[in-house]
Amino acid sequence: MSDISVVGLGAMGSALARALVDAGRDVTVWNRSPEKMQPLVDQGAQSAPSFGDALAASPRVIVCLPDYRATAELFEAPGVAAMLARRTLIQLSTATPKEAVFSQEWFSDHGAAYLDGAILCWPGNIGTPSGQIVVAGPEPVFADCRADLERLAGDLRYLGDNIRAPATLDLAFLSRTVGIIFGSIHGALVCEAEGVPVSDFTALLPAGDRAVPLTQAINDGSFDTITSAGASVDVAGSAVTRMRKQASDAGINSELPDLMCNWVERAQKAGYGSQETAAVIKALRRDG
Image (cartoon, rainbow, N blue to C red; front, side, top):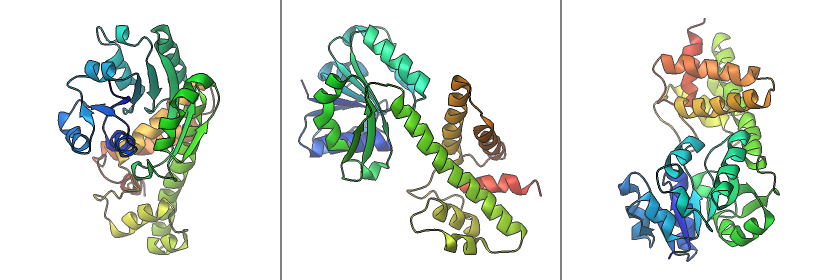
């Protein structure tokens, strides 16, 4: 039996598994696309032939999938729930607070210990002092998993037993980030309307600001290039849709996520979904 299994090997899941292998842990990995397992196997991980095998391989399982729906599809498959007793699930998939509560209840009902977390950094930060993860759940469960979680993020924050907390802070941080992004797109539109080079706007921004590559892409028209600090229109769409879903679940004002969803949907309808989020400006220019 290995120490820990990692399910989901996108950029973030692969970074999590790699950090654990580098830390000397015995790691089992699984992904729907088998070719994503091989680089980690080459570095010392064990590959599982199926999701069930990955679950059976370790007492502790990290799940890092695009969303909770993808997680539910795996764990609600026939025969899987019966394997959960006396295992610990660390859920690092993207979620809303309501989904986190449902997930904790479901796993607890099937005999598994459960932690819910959110990753607030880029894949390249995982396994470094700048890595940041927030996590919540029963304190004894966190204490048991703490050493492995600290291997993943130098800035690990335990938020107590309020299982809603990680997804809530993730959404709050996301709101700030997309506010910068969509506000800067409008800022670039203002510059274009008044005959001021967008590059002059970029020059005012602090180094490292998310709006720097965004406004550079608008100035250069390089919408097909997504930098390591960037994201596509479709990815931004998933983020703001999650913000709108949380607003609906909580019964709070949704005007800001509604606006950003509208902008994204217009850009997607125009065929810009796979381009940098900056491409939203092309849909807004049509209003002029």
